[in-house]
Image 1 (tube, rainbow, N blue to C red):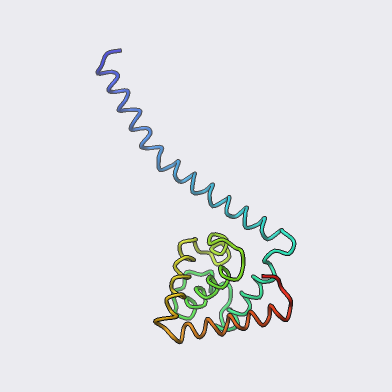
Image 2: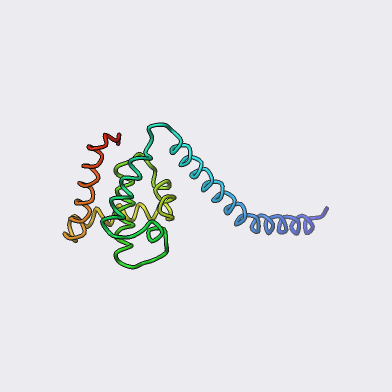
Length: 153
């Protein structure tokens, strides 16, 4: 095999690897999503886990904003639904041991969206007094229900 044949073979191999890389990345993402779902399901199956608390949080947020879970999980960008979705995400993250990814599974969003929601609600303490007051009211309602039902956080 001469030098030009080796160069051609090397070029072909590099080209094949370049074509495979996006496929491998897609498989890696699919595996990661599956692992997150498995961890979430395992967490839900653990006795004394977050189930009751998650349901209380969902109920309080949905009731306060007068929206349904299908609204939260939708792609809607309507203001009330967006606020409810962000508040729900932050409360699920702050009041349970769920990961960002697990919270994202509950509301049909990815972990980065949950992280953004945490930042937005945190920033609203300083910039949007009304939004933060709403959050605080819902949080207090949840705390009262948790005390009443003696749910472990």
